[in-house]
Amino acid sequence: MHECTQLEFVVNAKDPSALLDWASVRQSASNEASTIDNRTQTLDCTVEIEDKKVPLRFHLAEARDFPYRLMETTGDATHQQIVEAMAKERGLHWTKGRLFDAMGQPVQCETEAQIYEVLGLPYFPPELREGQGLLIDPEELVDANDIRGDLHTHSSWSDGTLPIRTMALAAQARGYEYIAVTDHSQSLAIAGGLTAEDLLRQREEIERLNDELSGIKILHGIEVDILGDGTLDMPDEVLWELDLVIASVHSAMNQSPKRMTERILKAIEHPAVDIIGHLSGRLIGRREAYGLDFSAVLETAKQSRVCLELNANPNRLDIPDSWLRLAGEAGLLVPINTDAHSAQEYDNIRFGLRMAKRGWLHRQRVLNALPLNELTSLLHRKRKRQ
Ligand SMILES: [Zn+2]
Ligand SMILES: [Zn+2]
Image (tube, rainbow, N blue to C red; front, side, top):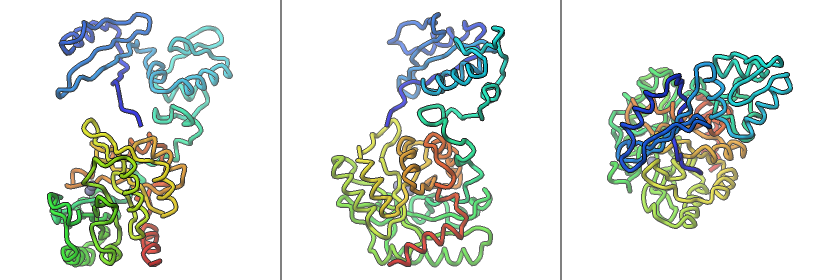
């Protein structure tokens, strides 16, 4: 897992003086004045955003070079080598951020898509421009049209802001077929966690709503706490009555990586668990991940047929891209969940989808891309086994 260390921009700057002026005003006081590196045509500076020093790099490009610079700066070395080799095969020559034909004339392309077309390749989004990404068919990656529901939502029964009915109608208005209401369990008192009796009453409400509403199905789930010792914060017989069980860590987060791994493996092996919520525990810019042994987690999740959530909350984006790639390769199903505490937070699905693309997630691997009947039969099969 790597942290972002720098924000990079490609700018169409025929006259970069305005950019230099901007950088000298915004430059944080401790740094020297910004200058343009003439060899690489880049400008580095550090600015302060919300009390954090953020290093920025601007790649300067004239309009005609812009798509080439964009492509060069968004792929890794392997991708660039492949692109240059493809150009050569076609009698073209890629040099210094430009493409030339056999006569030495520049090939004019206005977009990256046009460049790929000239090279005889389909358009590869930036997320695929590294490692083995060029072997992936971009058409197979999950996108917004594939998402049929949200499997991690909170209502005013716990720390959500809206009643279940409102959350369900808002999901329907987005074109979803289903949501799972997954409020917190009792030990998370700060978030109004539910007791077993609360869940019984919540079930009655959900049954009533499912009778009343058409075109949207509400699944009754829970986000049950994984307690410090790896046991779950709800009796088994209560969990078996639910349609869906997400198990998540919300406490004792400073355990050693080894202990945290054992704790989470124990939860994965609990037969009533369907999904592990925000597995790595990172809060971007605020809290490091737990340092789990991910290969052990992956292996156990595969054997136990447990899904690892991609939590789309922009503070989490958890699990991260490198783990998503491994989860996809291992054949795991990954739900892209917004963990919405309000109807607006359904919109966070867009961040989850961006992350899914970085994780090369095929639509067949996405749990909430399944139609309702397939989703429920998958969940029921697990429950019938008991
Ligand atoms: Zn949670
Ligand atoms: Zn949650």
